[in-house]
Structures are given as structure tokens and as C-alpha cells.
Amino acid sequence: MKAIFDWKGQSLVLNSVFILVNLMGVTLITMGFHPNFETVMLPLILSGLAILIVSVIGLIIFKGKLFMSLVSRVLVGGLFIVSGLIKANDPIGFSYKLEEYFEDGALAFRIKEWFGLPGFSLEFLIDFALFFSVLICIIEIVLGVLVLIGAKIKFTSWMLLLTMLFFTFLTWHTANCDANKKFLDRDTYSYNDPIGIAKREEAKTNKEIKIVSDSKEEIVVDEMKQPQCVTDCGCFGDAMKGSVGRSLTPSESLWKDYLLLYFVAWIFLTQKRILPNTTKENMYILPISLGVVLFFSYVFGWYFPVFFGFICLVTALWINRMGGKYLGNYWGSALSVVIICILFVAYVLRYEPLKDYRPYAEGNNLRQKMFDGVQGKYVSMLVYKNLKNGEVKEFDASSKEYINSKIWEKVATWKYDTMVTKEIVATRLPSITSQFNPTIQSQEIGKEEKSLKFIQDLIKKSNVNNTVINEVSLRDYITKAPLIYVLFSKDLAKIELDELNDIKDVFYNSTKKHVPFIFVSNALRPQINAFRKKHHFPVASFSNDITELKAISRSNPSLLVIANGKVIGKFPGKSIPSYDWIKKHTLNK
Image (cartoon, rainbow, N blue to C red; front, side):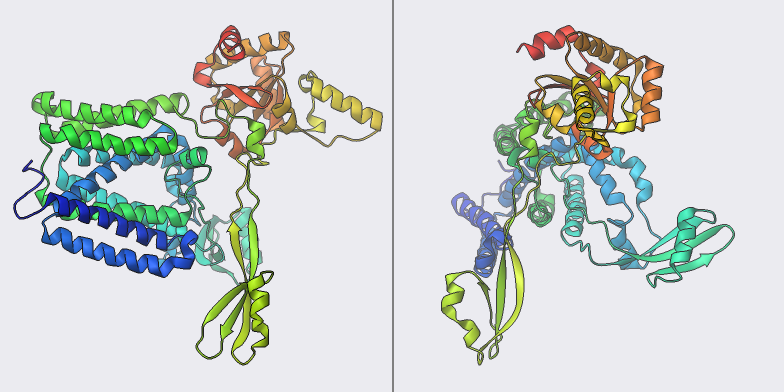
């Protein structure tokens, strides 16, 4: 055990106590900055800070720094594997979040402000968002494995530090973004660009718009704009929302990264004394590490990370021993983990996430997800200020405390200052919002749509009542139908012919059984009509916002089988089963 601990002059028991106390101190400080503990904020922070300082001094005196570093390695490595795998499980979803950060008014506005570069932009990275998504999750997993086995620790500790500084900057930016604050932005338009022409005219009356240059080639415009604040960092993809009901708030995400950065600092500062694990050390370090993975797997309701982490760790150690001249080292170990990650990512990109945390996952009741939001509760607080010592008191205007205090009568001591609104229960939107709303305009209803009994009944009803149908929504129809097949597509041009043939099999057989089959996309009606005509696919078609189509399915297309609002089958375009298979394994199970 000499590779990890130098026992001379130290006590295992005392250092274990100091580590537990250290973790307690960190926990108290974190709690102190959480809104739920606002009333005891100062005592928590001060006590946590005192405990933290005492424990650090104790670890230094009793030579327990390496022991604390080991604990940090287990915590950081385990969480990195889980966090990276959750992102790798849904790289397309994570790429959508990166696209938000790359928007001109999101992350770029910090650079514009700090360095006086109004023309700076990150929008060119949007096309590479998926690449960065895959790269980031692979880096997380590889670093998690390497730090657990003690491999290339100098390189690993530097990479961990740089990675955490990057993540902490992102979450700091997210937590401190003020949507009401404005920044100077510079845009360049071609001379005939309608937007540039409109800006030229608007600058004559709007002081927040300035024409920097106006030539026959281009128009350069400076404009004060509001930032695009990202409300969810996407640290755990949809996993938090799908497992515990909500994502981490920006502030919680920031403190999560502060904690990880703290533990990474212990690893970084002790890197010179950390040696690769011996076989004996791996016998207890790796099971404990997998225990950490198991804990987070329990939180996210998905135990595959335990199996995945085990495979990565065992493969990395096996390659290091059996990889021969070129792979029998820790670079070979890292490469083996990269290959495992690439294979996993390739699978989910071709099909669907292995674990679907979205509200449209198989087994979910769409109707319930449409009404699982929480109505926020707020209270108006009257703020009074002490004229003598500046003390501030807040009162709920309807509370007995306020009425009994009669503070409004104590004009010599107290003065009403202002009214503030406090959140008691946070508002939470339903999992499925009104963005899920497949519709069709009345003038676009064709014979394909009229084949649906729902549309026929609606037309009859309008004729009887002598009313005009402007738009038809299928939101309720889809979620209340005894059985319905719904095909979703984000891009008609990317539907492959083989996939379409499999879909047609389901379509024609369901039609024979008088089971409705509908098609939902974001395409315009002329595109839909051309698609149906070209592929001889007379399916009733409707439109929906692209944002929700991205949330429904990562694959294009995707077929959902819905019974009384419950998704009983969900199939990506690459693996659409036959109608008989669906009948046997989905409808009759």
C-alpha cells in the first residue's frame, strides 16, 4: 500500500475523521448558499468554513493529503464516468444545448463585453456542435477511468483541472446571466440585405443602433442587444428532469462544479505523489469507485453506467497488461476506452438513446405528462428599515406577525421601504407543453386527412352548426385515441427509402384494421404533398414546431405507437419493425 499511503507519522483513524469532517464542511458551505437555507445562510457558511479549515490543517499535520486525494479521485472519477455516459447516451440532445451556447447573444457576449470585441461570434461553431458534444462526453469518461486507475496522473490532473475550469466558467456564465442587461453587438450585412436596409432606417430614430460603415459592399451596424440566457446548462442532459422531476438550477449547477473543482484541486496538488494503482490496490479502489457510480445510477434511475464503468475499467487495465509493445501502456488504456465510447455513441446516434429520459419515452402517458406541471406560489413581503441602525425586516402583509407588530405605527424607529415578491413554490412547466400541437389549416385538409374519422366528424359538426374551421389540432385526438400510429420527422429529405418501405408496411396494414396512422413534420404543405406524391404514401399529414419534434425523437423518422395516451412502442427509423411484429410484441404484450 506504499504506492498510495506513506503511513509513517500518520493515523488512519484520524485522517478518516478529518476527511469526513472536510466533506461535512464542504456540504455546510454549499447548503449555506442554497436558497432553501436562506434563513440560516450565515451560520451554515461560517461553521462550514471553520470546519473545512480545521480539517485541512489536520490532514496536512497528519500527512493525510494523499488519502484525501484518493477520496477525491474516487468521487471525481465516478461522477465523470456517469456524467460523460449520460451525455454520450444522448449526444444529439447535448449538441442542441451547445448550439444554445454558441448563439451570438449567449456565451459570446461575455467576450464582447470583457475584451471590447463587439464583432466577436461563436456562431461558426454551431455546425460542429455534435462533434463537440461527442468529444466532451468521451473526454469526461476517459478522464474518469484514468484518474481511478492512477494512469498518466500528471496529464490526467491537468486535463481534469482544465475541464473543470471550462465547465465552471459555463455554469458561472449561466448562473450570472442577466437577461435585462444589454451589450454592444456588431453585425455586418451585405448592401442589399433587407435586414441591413431596415437597420439603416431604424438607426435614424433609435439611439441604440449606430451605423459604423455604409458602403456599396456592406453595412456594419452596432446595436445594443439583450443576451440570450441559457436557463439549463445541460450538465446531465434530460436525466435530472426525467428522473427527479427537474433539472439543476443554474446556481445549483455552479455549486456542483465548485465542489468538483475543489476535489480536482486535491488531485492536482498531490499529483507528484500519486502512482499507478497496483493490482492489490485496484481490488478495493475499483469496487468503491463502482459504488459511487452505483449511487448516481440510482439517482438517475439507470444502472447501465455500473456495467459500462466496469467494462471500461477492466478493459483499460487489461490492455495495459496485455497490449504488447504499442498498446501495453496507459495510452493504450485511454485508447481502448475511447473506442468503447465511440462504439456506444455510434449506436445511439444510429438509433435512439439507450435510456430515454424525455416525456415521450416508451411507457410514459402523454396525457399525464401534459398536466404534471406545478403552479408557483408567491408572497408579497413588506420591507421596513430601522432609521437608527439600518436593520431591515420583512413581513408577509397577511401574517399575524405583521399585524401584531404594528410596525407601521412606530414611525420614529421604522420606515416602510419597499415591497418584494418572494417565491414559495417554484413554477414548473408540464413535461409536455403546448409546443406539442400537431395542426393543419382548414384550406390544407385533403382527401388523406379526410380519411380520419376525427376529421370527418369535425367537418360534419361544422356543417351542422354552420361554423368555419380555421385550424384543426390533433393534440387531444392523439392522446385520447384507443390506438394510433404517429410517424414523426424533422427532415423529409433525410428519410431513407428502405425506412419508408418499412413504414408503409405498418401504414397499409393499420389502415386495413381501421387504426389511424398520421404523419407529423415541420415541413410546409407543398413539401408534404410532393413527398407523398413522390413516394406514393397517402398518409394524413400535420405540422408541428421543430423544437418539439427534436424533443420527441432524436432519430429521423420515428414511429410511436400510442394507446389511450400511453406510448406502448417507440421505434427509430433504422429499426422500424413489421406490422406483424408490432402486433405480436407491442399490441399484445
